[in-house]
Length: 389
View 1: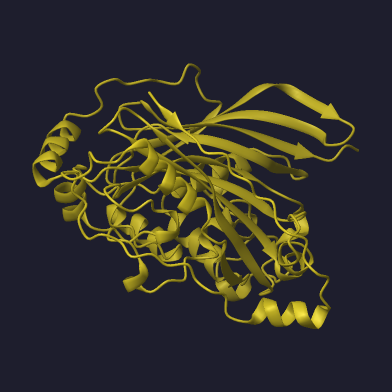
View 2: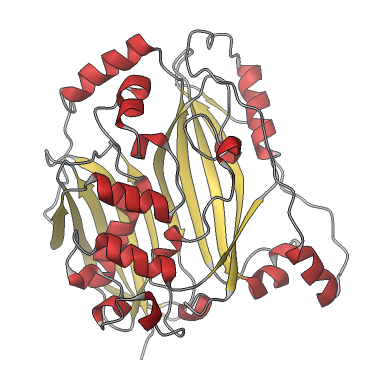
């Protein structure tokens, strides 16, 4: 296995101090959007001329892409619709607190309600027209282009800030996003490009105080998304992949421990559609069975990577005390999950409760998702915190 890396500096020149009125004008004016022209062919037939120097050029170009801003209004709409989308699939204990206390319509949610942890995933949608997307419906900001036409969600992490960082009060907020690292792994002809995407979610006031001035965010949600891009396949290769996928996983790895608590569900096309709509996600692997089978060689629609994360966070939230919050979660996607195939979301506390002067009381958790054969599809760890009395 080879790993190709090029040193990358994020140093920036000092920026002049600006008045608040100047900052607001910059904040509200249109932001230039990075764009790229993409090849229409996903075939790997012409892919073997990619040298190490070529990969280095790809990495340097991707790291030079400017950050992308996605503004949103923190209304209760998307959070409430996510509750509705999950209502037939998870127990009420795994729903958001407002839903459990009777706020089951958009208009009944109190504006002081905190954004449920994990619900940020259905806000800050990609704001590009269909003609600006990649061939498979994905965001061109993340794509290395060329023969690397197949994208999968490899994993990531989320670190949550304080309780009052986001409220469903229709205030303005923004997602600041950039490609943070790119690595190439695998033998020649079978390379995979791993793209690390940094996303920072903050209220408008925090953005004006920090990122707009070239300073790091201090309050908000910090998320990393790991994406892997693989070479496109020919129709013959897609058929071969489809035959292999129909046989199931060749090697099943199971969790070493039994869960303390778990929920089981069978995702339907309706659930996948609702989640795609809520996140404005046009990736065809979640929407078009024909594309899945004939272009990428999957046996059916794929379950969303962030939907797995949503379910893991929902189950973890259900096990916390009233004064306890999720502090962070790290996870890896090990194998795909498919529509109409049962899955199980599992949770287990690791060890005893710890306490420190700076963080308060904490608990550590194992969290994972099993496929219909009981094999690990997603595996992660999490930490919850509550204030010391």
